[in-house]
Every structure is written in structure tokens, then in C-alpha cells.
Length: 149
Image 1: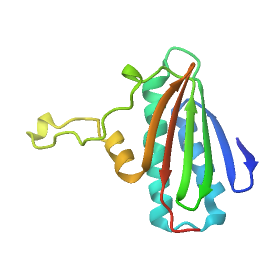
Image 2: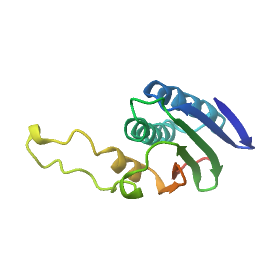
Image 3: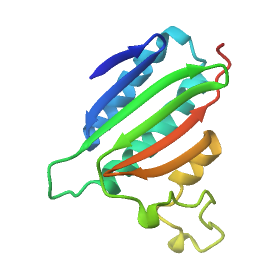
């Protein structure tokens, strides 16, 4: 569900389930349509948010319990689109976001890692990536550059 919070910004709130991520991405991109982002810019937003949201659903929420809530807040500034993603799931290990380095792929095909690329992509495509645990919530803030002013 989208909530306009001020001119040029919006909130999207979803339950922490896999199918809700797809709906949230569609809703965020719909709310960004007035900015006429290029296909590359929209694709970058979608990829960064998909990685972040899927990580939350997969790792922050207990599959045996009712899914938590995820709030995505977006606002535009001269330096790009800013996103704050807040969830009420489990904290990241040691209250830190994973390292931004790429997993080693210089191995036999059978030993290639199954995961670990998401945070590398987030850090590569977004700027000012910051994670904090605030009370009982996770806060991930990031910026995606855009040519729209």
C-alpha cells in the first residue's frame, strides 16, 4: 500500500512474504513513473530493491511465524533517489551489513557459491549504503543516482 508522505516522496508498506516483494517493486516503480527514469535507472532501482527486500524476507523473518512488515520510503534529492527500508525482522549478524566484496568465482564449477552476490550488487549499484539496528527494527538506507533533476 502506497502512502504519499510529502511532495515527491512516498512510502510502500508490505508484509514480509516473497510474493509481496514482487508487488512492492511494481508499486515503487509505478510511483516513480512521473520522474521518467531511463530504462537503466529504473532497472537499477528494481535490482537494488529486489536484492534488499528478498534478503529481508529470506533472512530476517522466521518462516514459522507470521511475516513481519517492511516499509520502503523513497524521496528524491538532487543527488538521486534515496530509499529507507525498515523491517521488524531479526537483526543482521553482529548488527552489521555483510561485506561488499564479490564471492570468489575462481573455483571449479561444482564449487561455485550459490549466494553472496546480492550485497556486492547492492554496494556496486547504490551509494551511501548504511545499515543500523534501531530498537527492534532494521534500517537500511541507500541512494540510487539518477539523471532526473
